Image 1 (cartoon, rainbow, N blue to C red):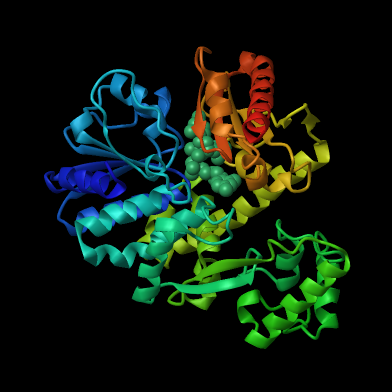
Image 2: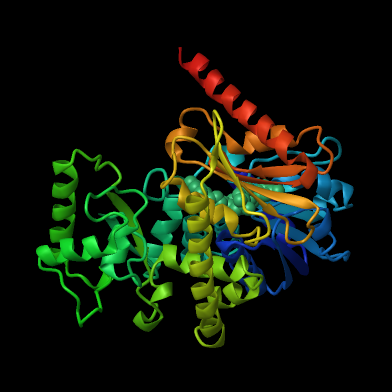
Length: 468
Ligand code: C5P
Ligand code: C5P
């Protein structure tokens, strides 16, 4: 079956029902997927209720209502089909919309699954798949393209190529045609183009190593002043979005000169940005896809996914004001995780780095902090972070992150964690080659880490052999 055929099968199942329960993930991709699906279904007169979960495991599975509604799992489910079958979910009344690695149930009919990864599209998230289903249901739903872009960017589907590609890029074109999305192609590869003072944006770009600027906001300020870009008022710097075309050119040229003069690689200097011209400049956190996604993450990963959902549906009053507080807290906590990792230091094994942060931070954010810390550590090796599971202290949550260059050398974190879970009572894991997670019993920690390191070593060795 092709992706389109899978989408059509899901659309047929949806059309024949009156009531749907969506079970979605708490991150930006899960929240935007839910908002796309719920709005598209409601427009068709279908009653929708939603449950957000941090992951599908025996504890969260109990939150799924035992009723006759059609169940749609979004941004999760593909890796937990056996568990869903054992829970009694009926295959013909259950749709899985996902982009995580699929692990079909051992016996029983397959669920109605629409997973872009099964069709070779690695760079599209669940929000993209949800959008394709919504568009199949009715072309009126093309106004939801913006949400699909936010979900894709939230899951970093642009990270490797620095732009959206494949079906996600086609969705982008829908948004551009609608006028809800502006594409800034080959722009400077920085984060926070609508809210961050420019020296901060330049200093904290993960992808660029600019001597005298990177990790040094004061140095970045001086660098900008030297080329005539100055604060708008004392201590108030413009954001990237505020600069004129000529000023942007000046900054780009100066950055290139500085990097080339010091022999730095400029290969990741430019990236696409996705702007939302309809969003108010006074609510700048929603003016571009990556900052919008951060806001959704700040709601979902701190137990308020419904706030993010309200923002996706257009609430710019009550929900937005609350979400602003969530965002401030989220940013400072992520920074704390990152500083804790870099200041405490990680343990280096032959093929990975690891650290245990105990109960200091919630398990929903440690992976993000670890991803950010990686560029300040040894980015050649994947990082594994452990913390106490906030729902069950006898369990440990594991998050792993690595970089595209490491994945291209044959490393697959999803495979490493699922293999290490195999045969271990109470362990479950999944995710992607570049970012994966697991829950394991506390007493398994040491043996589990050794296994993961051994599996990573095998992956490297296998890849070397394949390339001979
Ligand atoms: O559940 P899920 O797929 O949504 O989580 C994806 C996670 O992987 C996100 O935290 C995202 O930031 C991370 N990721 C990454 N690098 C990528 C793609 C995803 O760190 N290239
Ligand atoms: O939680 P974290 O952001 O580290 O998750 C990274 C990726 O691993 C996500 O895509 C998440 O859905 C997946 N994951 C999983 N099973 C787990 C934990 C995380 O599939 N038990």
